[in-house]
Image 1 (cartoon, helix red, strand yellow):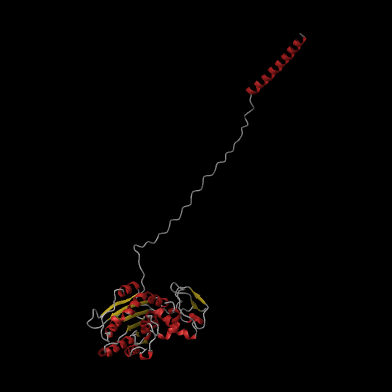
Image 2 (cartoon, one colour):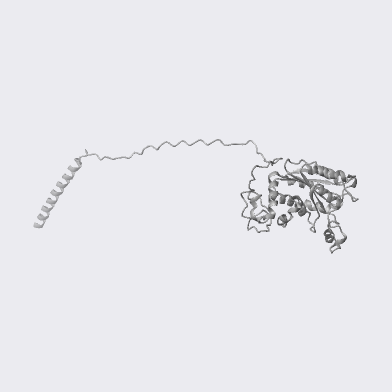
Length: 363
């Protein structure tokens, strides 16, 4: 009984304490903390972004209604000062004095030696020591051709015995044009094919042009035929060559290629025609490709050596006289059966054969 009384007292005290605490908690809930002091919340407001900068309006674009092509002028006027050649215009020279520098040429060319002086004075004095004293004249000659232009007309005998020569020219016309333009970019070429009286044709020609395609279209259908006697109408061929549209100021060259003499009765007229051509600044050279002038051709055909003493082994008399009247050169194949090399040498002149040798080695 005593224990019950004790627990009852403790329970009562615990209950009183619980009631007091609950009352105090209720008071706190009914009277919350003074909210007068408000919590300030600073909200950072971002400034509005700047207005974008105004883009500049694009400039007007040049527009062409149609494409245009630029062709070399018919007449080239030499400038007052000689400008240096472009770096990709090689001078194919093998200098006896031994130039040490060079540059690459497009196929089929290769690096050719040039001296240290190349650059500031063009092809003239600019070749420097790579040319050597004996070669300065050639450099000056090439410089003049580059400034003024070069026109070359091939006058070719197209009778039956000339088939092999015409075939080689057909096959190598690109080499001829490309090699000459390696030295003289502003070079034009024309062709005249002649036969004799009472043939399929007497004269056919292709005017001077920069286009190799036109030259090929003229040469491809050309066939050697006719003839029969030892004379051909060279006068008609030369007359057609002289009558070409030559540029004013350009170097004018006619190269006659044949294996038969002209008619004797027209020879004086022919020489007079050549003299008038040279009086107007032209040059005429001849290339005799006849077997008598080139016994090496016979040896190749026969496949054995022959007694060369019984052959003329030099140009025929008429070709020598025509070249003399034309202030040019009279040549043969000189033991080399490649007509291409001889034509290029005659274009530049026999006096420059040594300087041209390096360039011709790649042909």
